[in-house]
Length: 305
Figure (cartoon, one colour):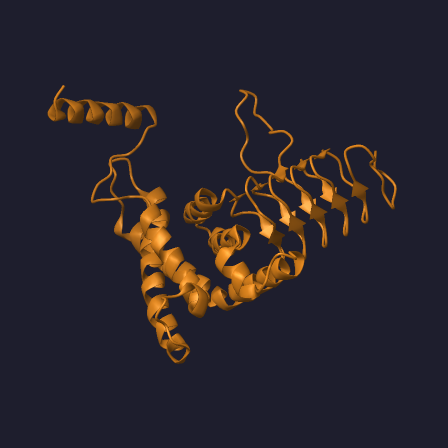
């Protein structure tokens, strides 16, 4: 089969898929956000947040503000394009077109989202500073906060997560998920952008960590590699289809430590100051100050078995 035949068969495959999925005809170009464009935006935001560490190698400190202003103008302009694509997409009519009124409404909402996101950047920087400091103070191998910022995959994942979570809060879940998956692919750390994570969060080593959408994590929490904060079960409808949404992931209170390979499932609460040992499988809540290991589950409070 020559190239024309391959092209024809690929077109037929696309048409079968679009018909089966009841996909609308895309008119006027790309209808969904671009992973590549968002990767570039995140790269620019990283530089604007930490210019002398993650910015261009020839940047001088006296030019920081000029660099940040220029970079933010570019990043937020491109982010606006991507937000518009996400917000416009649900407004298409059956023939793939959109009304002018729907476009104007989506564009106005997109501008509001990007403005709110830009105003969030100082707060995101403050949270990331707390994450960097937690990693430095929590790892005896860390020689400096600069090493942590430049080298640690957990910090790279958290830069993406702090950005992604804000986009999620602002009503652009697809963009948020793409930003999160960029970090997942690079670090092996899978944090859903919906997860709520307090200040001073430290993921040591990091590979294989999974944090679900409705997880809530307090301040100064530490996780090691291959920890899962997942769902125990999924609710289904009468036809057996998984129901979307619903709180289904763990709540970790402040100062919790979970060691490598532990799995915590369901809407359970790990009380403040608790330590969960390596490879523990936990599906029930534990009170503050608990010490849970595979062989010897003990606690300073009641309810641990």
